[in-house]
Every structure is written in structure tokens, then in C-alpha cells.
Amino acid sequence: DSNGTWTLSLSSQYYIKNNVLVATATSTLENTSEFSVGYSVRTLVSSFQKISDTEGNFTAAIDGGDYFGRAISALGDLDGDGVTDFVVGVPSDDDGGTLKGAVYVLFMKTDFTVNSFQKISDTAGNFTTTFNTTDLFGRGVAVIGDVNGDGVFDLVAGAERDDDGGTNRGAVYVLFLNSTGTVSSYQKISDTAGNFTATLDNSENLGTAVSNLGDFDGDGINELAVGAWTDDDGGNARGAVYILFMNTDATVSSYQKISDTAGNFTATLDNLDYLGYSVANMGDLDGDGIIDLSVGIHNDDDGGSNRGAVYVLFMNTTGTVSYHQKISDTEGSFTAVLENLDAFGEALANVGDIDGDGISELVVGATSDDDGGSATGAVYIINFDNPNGNLIGTLTIDSHPALSSTAVNLSSDLTLTFTTENAIPANGDIDIIFPVGFDLTSIGSADVSEAQGDGGTLTTSINGHRMTINTGTATSASTQFALTITNLSNPTTAGSYGTFAIETQDENDAVIDQGIGNSVTVTAATYGYEVTKIEDTNNSGCQVGF
Image 1 (tube, one colour):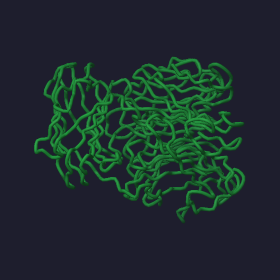
Image 2 (tube, one colour):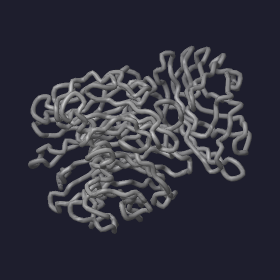
Image 3 (cartoon, rainbow, N blue to C red):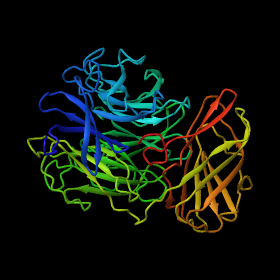
Image 4 (cartoon, rainbow, N blue to C red):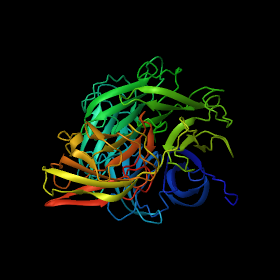
């Protein structure tokens, strides 16, 4: 309105990229669901573009009760026009039957209106699976990165009421996409599919929320966090989150459950808390080199009935919890006043480092907040203290990696030049994660050198696709490294590509520098390799979205 007050009821999920706020909104006037795109400048709205059944050049036919916008994720530039595209969940869509669900891929214009779209459902988008009624496909959506190495980002979508193995046990689909937004192939993960060996119970609702966790185990493949909000570990519907370690074919390599009784999670949950209704990748909050996770628990009773809470889980590489911090009406130095039934934590999103302190901020939905009217909803932007008091600096790539061999599956030398912002102490590390396809097994310490001798004697260790280079001597701030790596085996598949992630660490493995410009993509052409740099648009050091 004229006072800058948002008058729509906010619910579901939120995402900010390049200061663009994407939020689910349910209009109190139209009684339909849609999502909006607007600019966020220090939490004030500069402008916005609504996308709905009647606005934003969105020409799809949305029916009443579809809940368009129940889940949202940035998809990267799928069609190569330089504009980030989005995927939107519509879990109550009726294609093929009642509440089977759907997902829309929205190809966007620079003014945030829709250029074109592709629907994926029981009857659209070349998706050949068979849904049952009330499967709620699209309840959660996330981008997992390019799992199969075909140059197109792949999509994860939950179907929380899938009946594989029993009633409403839930499922997750990994969709291998074409650049047109249609489905090339897919892999289902459920109680009976995808090599997922956990035992799900009836009404567990796996797939309520999904998030890309990055590469936990250093094998070059991103892991997934999947919510199962009505899991009964420890009591009735206390909830759970599964960490899925993935294979390149999108089946599950292994998993770790986090619940009231599993995963070294020492919090005390109550019945009907609903842990896992929302999940968000928070990046490395404590500087230990491991991605951390936020999990919503919107029925938590701290301070009153169903006020809600968020747990920040500081993770181990095994997928277990190292320690946690609760944020609620009574914990975590959260000074806002929550009221009964606010449902704080029903939606979560990492919005990047807005204030430049090196720590990502968290957006939290409180869908039943009463500001301005009954259950109109609210959004909180949470600024965290740095757990270790350290600010993570910027590591900038100065020149692209160059491969000496242009042939597929042959040994190559690679050169890489980058500049650190901060000093690296003696016995610090340079950590490089290589894309899927590269073979590091033949690389030893003698195969890594630095042109100017910076870092002294370099000692190299390999763990899957992760190369750790230990520095024998300290280096000063603003040091430019020129690394040469030999005996690197090129990818085996022509046309494959991936992203290098680079960071520096101290002697205790706490992150020193990472971020802007530390991502490059290697594209394997039919007769050779073309090397290009990807713009690091969200300062995360990786084009793949969290």
C-alpha cells in the first residue's frame, strides 16, 4: 500500500538472488496462490512483479486450489539467454487426477515477467512416471546441480503422499532436464525405489521439503536434505530429516537420518513438532569447511502454543549433527515477540550474505502471524552472529584453468591462478573440489607446484574429487598463487562440464577465503575442451543454486 506495507498473506518459500526476493503469496482478495518477484534493499521493497493466473505474462491456466507457488527454487539459466529461470511447485494441480501435483519451469525475462513456461506433471513435460491421486508432486522443489554431466541443471521434486511401500510414505523424484524444461529421464527415490534402504512408515511424508546440500563427502556429487515432517522417531509426528548421499545416476549411495533419536541430534522434540517441514542449506556458518543446515519446526511450543522455531544444525561430513542452535521465542537471542499459532519456521531460505559480514542470512516464514489481520503472515530476516568470530574473505580466480590435453579420457596438466584476500598460516590448506569426471587418483605431491614457491613445500592429499594442498610455510594477504597440477585425467564424456570450488583454510581447517569468482566451468567439446568462467552472481562461489 502507500505506506510500503505488504498486504498479501505470505506463506511457503522464499529465495533471494542478486537482491531479488522471491516469495510465495496468497492474496486475501483473490483467494488464489501465486508467487511474487521483487527487489529487497535492506529489507525494503523497491519494486515487485507479481506472477499469477492473471499477471506477469504467465499464460498457463491455474485452477482454484492449485496452490501455485507452494515451493520455489532458482534453476539457473536453463535456456542460455543470460536470465535466471525458476521452478515453481503446484502440489494440488489435478493433471491426470485429483491433487496429483505439478511443477512449472518458468523461463524469465529481465523485467521478471515470464517469457515462456514448461509444465511437468502426470500428463505434461515428457514425464513418464505414473502418479496416484493426492500424491502432491511439487510439494518441495530444489536444484541439485548437473548430476549426469550433460550441461543442464537437474531438478528434485517431492511427492510427499506417494504410496510406495505403504500409505503416504512419500517420495522424491530427481528429474534430468532438457534445456527446454522437459524431462529427459528421471529417478524415483522412495521406500521401494532408488536404492534408498531406510524403512519409512505410513504417513511419514518424505519429500515435504528438499534442499541441495552441496558435496559433503568429496565425491563430486551434491547431497540432498529431505524432510519427513511426520516421522514418529521418539513420539508422534516429531519429524525427521534425511541426508541422502547420491550417486551419479541419482540413486542413493547411503543416507543419514536426523531425528529425535538419530543422527547425534541432542535436542528434545515434542509430539507434533514437525521437524523437517522446511529445510535450507546455510553454507558453512562456522568455518569448518562443512555445509550447515537450517530446519524448520513450526509447531514448536517455546513460549506458547505452536509459536514455532528453527534449528541451525552444524554438520559433520558423515551427515550427523556436530552441534545445534535453536532459534525460538525463548532461545537463540531472538528478540522478536512470537505469538501462539504464528508457525515461525514453516518456510526457510538462505538469502546470502546481505550485510557483508561473511555469514549468510536466513529468511524465515511465520505464515500465521497476525500483523494487520488474522493469519496474514510475516517474514523474518535473521542475521546470525559468526560462531567463530571470523570473517570469511574472498578468493578470486585471475586466470581460467588451462588443460594441456584436449582429448577425452587422457592425462592432462592444469594451470590455475588465483589471489587470496587473507593470509594463510603455515600448515594451512588450499582445498580444490573438481567436477565429476576428472580422475585424481594418479596425482601425488610431486605433481603439484607453485610458480613463485609461495606456500613453501606443498603436500597434496586426494579424497575422491577433493584435492587438499597443505602449505609448508605461511603466505601473506593478497598473495597470487599460480598452481600447476599434472597427471590429471580428463573427463571421459565429450560435452561434460562441471564447477571447480576453491577455498583456503587455516591449520584447524577453518575456512579463510572463498566466494567471488572461485567457480569456473570446463566444457568438453567433441574435439577438445573450451574453458569458460561462470559469473558468480550470488557470491557463493558456485553457480549451482542452494
